[in-house]
Image (cartoon, rainbow, N blue to C red):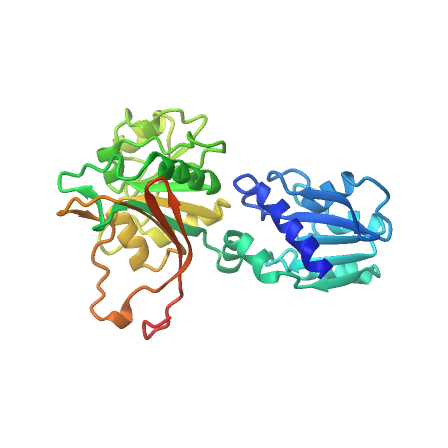
Length: 369
C-alpha cells in the first residue's frame, strides 16, 4: 500500500536525526503529489526546523493539494520554532498521514484536531508500532517523566566484566568499542560510578564515531574523585556533573566546583549511596531524556534492583577468565519467578564479539511480566 511505503521512507529519514534531535523526537516527513515525491525532510537538530517545515521548503513544486506523510503528529504550539500545523494549513496541504500521535501534553492530539478543523483530511496510525519504536526514548520520557535508561557492559563468555584484580581494558574488540561510542553519541548523558573512574579512568567522550559528547555524570557519594581524572578534563567540550550526598560546604565539593565540574547533592538511599531514582528525577527536570549507564557493577545492580532500566546491551567477548568480577550483583532474587525478564530486540556480531540488545519487560507485583 502506498501509504505504508511513503511512511516507511519518512521513518528512514527520521532516523538521520538520531543523536542530534534529542530531547526532541526524531521525525521524518515526505510530501507526495500525484503519486510523486516532491518534498522530503527530517528534524536535523534540536532548535532547528521540524521535519514538516524542511519537507515544505525542500519541495520541488507547489505543495497545494498534496499529501504529507509524517512519523509523528505535527506540533501546534510555539517553542523554539513556530507551530508546524500553521505551515501545513498555510501551504494548503490537503491530506496528512500521521504515524503516531504525540505524547507531549502540549500536543497530544491537539495538532490533529487543529488540522481537521482547517478541513484537512487526516489518517492516523500508519506503521504506528514502527514509529513508536523509533522514538522509544521520547515516548518513555513523555509518558513516565523519567529518562530512558540503557545499561551497557562488556563481559567474557563466562560472565565477567573484569579479572579478579579488577582489570577490564579491553574485554571487547575494537569494533565493539566503536559500537559503544555510537551508543554514547545517541544518549543525552552517560553515567558511571566513582569505582569505574578510579579503576579505569575513562574519558567518557565520543571519539571513535562522529557525534556529540553526552553529559558526563559521576555518581560519587563521598567525593573521592581527583581533579586529575580524565572526566575532569575538557569540561568546556564535555561537561561533567558530579552527584554526591555531601553538601556544598564540604571543602572537596568546593574544590571540584573550582576545577570546572558541576556538582549536585542528592539524598542518600538506605545504603547511604546516591538515590538513583531521585537522581533520574533531577535529570528529567533538566530535560535529559536518555541516560547510558556504563558501570560499574554496583551502579548497574542498583539500577536493576530499583527497576530503573529500560534497555540492556550486553557485549559478549569470546574469552574465559574464570574467577572475576560479575556485571550484576545480588538482586535479592530467590525464586525463578522473580527473575527480570527481557525481550531480545537484536543479536549482532561486531568483530569477534556478540552483542545482545534487550528491553526490560515490566513486572507485575507477582514478579511475572
